Image 1 (cartoon, rainbow over the protein chains, first blue to last red):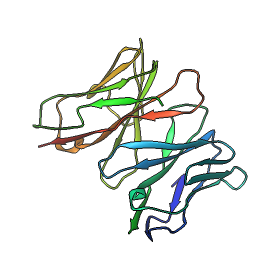
Image 2: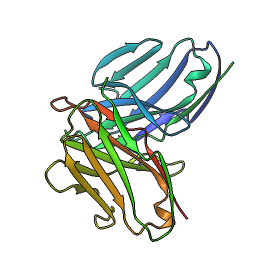
Image 3: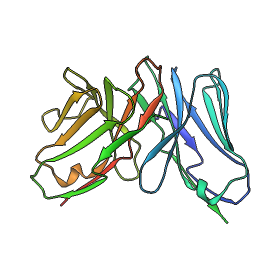
Image 4: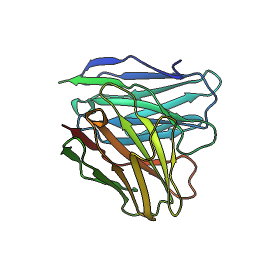
Length: 110
Length: 116
């Protein structure tokens, strides 16, 4: 049983396009992360949120607790945004119990 | 922002040997660190929780005698893969939360292990 589903799995966009990546989960969560993983493997935490909306530069993350759904938006996409974007959530009140999605591979073409 | 480093970034070893991976919090203290691994085209999975001054706790299915974890100080946790096998080849990542913070995590850059 998949507790977290991301869509789409793969996404190709042209530079400048607005991008949305979705994450749905099936259990009650404590907090949700959006992570960025570059081809070399390193992971950067983009957002951690438990309600509402957060914005950082061209990135926006939203979460709807009632609908068990979160979205990551990228405005004015750029080739350097090409990476795998992963949503992950905490459950059970534990800092370490992170359940990771399989990721969305984004390629932004110039 | 907080920084977590890992060493080495990649390692190739022969089957049967042991490999040590270090995870350091560079500008903050971490009483807890987490070790994850990621097999190709798979999700990251939590392996174990490293606790400073006490034994690590392992997730179900992870052999504690094979994956030795030592959290020797407030800034260093090590993962030793003992008697490595080709099936241990994976990407290993550590993370550390800031003390007192709720769920904020800082991830290391990862270590790619290849066992031949």
